[in-house]
Image: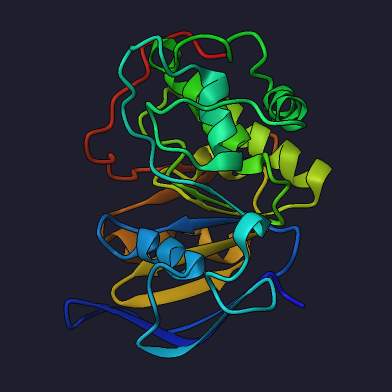
Amino acid sequence: MPAIELADVAVARDGRTVWSGANVDIERGEFVAVLGPNAAGKSTLIELLLGLLSPSAGTVSVLGAAPGTHGSEIGYVPQRHAFDQTPRIRGTDVVRLGLDGTRFGLPLPWRDGHRAQVQEAIELVGATEYAGRAIGECSGGEQQRLLIARALISSPQLLLLDEPLDSLDLPNQSSVSALVDRIRRERDVTVLLVAHDVNPLLPYLDRVIYVAGGRVLAGPPAQVITNETLTALYRTPIEVLRTSDGRLVVVGLPEAPAHHADRHAHP
């Protein structure tokens, strides 16, 4: 059974159709990127799969059931927000929120067995060295690893990540992409990752979903990552090059809004 199935799905907001006619099947264990121009409805797809938004037409199946019925079977990494530098919330506290869901700033007493689960998730993403720091003192890449650890703490079958590479410098983008792929292979997790720049993800992708012009289409990278398809998708000239070792490189993607390089050293 596919991890995700969309059959003739349409989604509307405030009476306006965001996209329609979406037919997508994602197999279990696949690494899938969601691409598209700004405001095309990429994050809307994530909300739909989480059950936060209902389709206006068609049917949606996530892990064989209706969206919103899976609980800990789905790990979710939302768009990263800025953390202040208060010492009260440490990296370990952020990871623990994946278990007890307590709001930031409230006491989070340890429960039996939680300590081992938290430590395992932190070790899985390679964050042991800095997990004890205040979250606001961690670099962007370190924060992202801790947020991924939070999403993984319940051993989900599906991991949804909404622009986890945004506002990271190039080394961190590559590092986080490789981390997600390693976890996907080791834990047999299906990954759906919304991205602006596909380049750091290209070595790992099984499938690409692109959202543009009111449509949602999917295909293998070789079909989607082409000059013609990406130029039509972003409505600006895009060039896909192949390096001497066979890797694809996409040139000419418009810059993401409010993008800034992470000034901290990458983990």
